Length: 302
Picture (cartoon, rainbow, N blue to C red):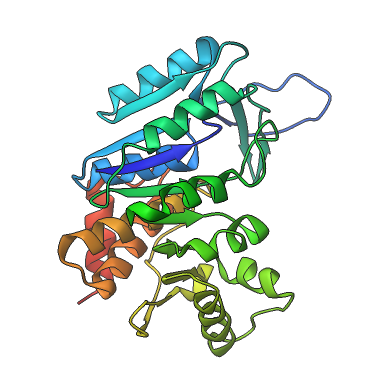
């Protein structure tokens, strides 16, 4: 089973405008609602690719109920922990020219709720995969990823971590199966600017020296690079299409990578599948569909 953890999921409320006048009443031309959070996005793409997944995380209030029901309507198994107070957050994304985002704070996650999550994770085995994705709410200790990975380390569980800077650097000692910074985040971790592919490969290998097994680097319009635990270096171009969505492409890439790898243990195939899923989401209003994925996959050739 593939488990995903989303500490602070959200209802993503997308508002489309044909004009924006600050300080005045603005009326949308249409709206959409998505069930958001990086781990939930990963679960959605895995489900689209035909893999079983369980989404873990915390929900609260009437918005939490809406999110739980919405995730279930997508056919995704979830095992959310309900918090005693507050509401699952709503993130508002206004699309008019440049996208403007207003992200909610989210409910307080109690120590009792966190302990309940730890207990659920204790049930995982070496046959399982765990995806830890996204930022940590300020009501949780900032080393919670480290605590989870230290707790699970003796089990030999393959863990993918999609996080930034110190949050990512601090878990490398637990040898995550996969990490996925982009080229800018990669440079920030070392206080440099990665200007060439040689720079990217060099610093990605430095992350391996710190403990990462496989390092997947997304490079926006320049494609992606994968440095495997076997020392192989693969590069992949980009899919062709019009970018209409900035949310979930990285999560889709992680999910696609895992799915591609599980298919036959081939890292190049994992990179190709991940790239197709990430591109498909970038070219879609929501997450990548099966039809779009197949189109993107075919674009990338053999």
